[in-house]
Length: 195
Image 1 (cartoon, rainbow, N blue to C red):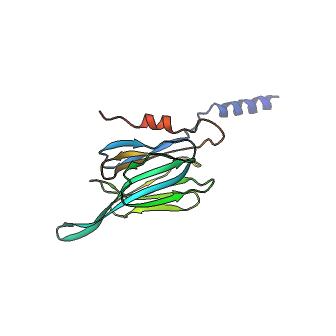
Image 2: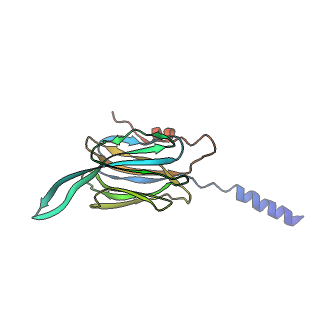
Image 3: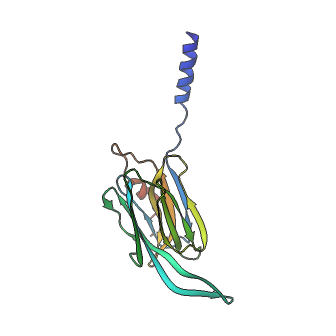
C-alpha cells in the first residue's frame, strides 16, 4: 500500500513540472530598416516563393573586385491552399517550391550584408529538400527550432523599396486536428507599427 502511495505521489509530481514552451524564435539578422512584416495563415506552410535580384555590377574597393550585388527582393508563403501577401517585391528571378504532405521547413539559413539586404536564402525541409535563392556571399546565418518536432510557422523582418533588409524565424507545432493553428494573432503581436 505504501508503494502505491509513493508511486502515485511521484507521478503527480511529474505532472506538476512546467511544460516546456513549444515555440521558439530565431532573432532577426540584417540591417533592419524599412517596413516591418510578419507572415501569417491557417495551417501548415505548403509552398514558398522567393524572388532574387541580380545586379550585374561590381564593387571596387582598394582595387579588389568583390561579389556582385545580388539580394532577396521578396518572398511569399502558402499556408494550406492560400498564399500570403508578397513581402518585399516580385522583382527578379522567382524560385518556387511546393511541399509534399507531411513535409515541413525545419531550417532557414543564408547570408546577409549588414549594410543592406539579405543576399542568400536557403529553406530546408524535414525531407532534405532545399530551395535556395540569391548569391552566397557576406555574413552567414542559420535558424532552426529549439524543440524537436517544431517547424517554421512565421517569417518576420523588414523590407524597403528594393528588397528584404532583415529576417527572423518563428518555430512551433502545427495543430492539424482542430482550431488554434492560426498564425495571424502571433503575427499581429510580433510586428510593431511605425508611426
